[in-house]
Length: 94
Image 1 (tube, one colour):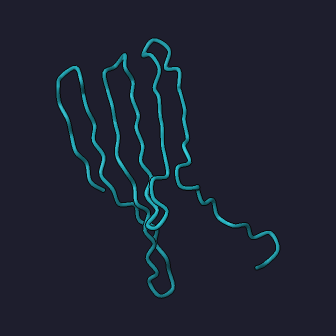
Image 2: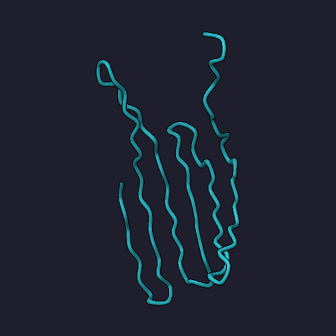
């Protein structure tokens, strides 16, 4: 390896990232993500704002493609947005 080339970030199975954002008058938004599978790599996430009655959760599976002289990074997964005040749920695939 050339000098200065570092190993890419590789989260450990079960590793959890938590974040809480103060949105002022709109309350707090909480974000939790976890590496739930190593091979294939899958990350799950959950976001909520209780004051706004919104939740957003799902999972992401990154994939790579090598196309001759180029490479592409693709994200596959499913997520759900719940608008609790209206009792509505939306599913999104990417």
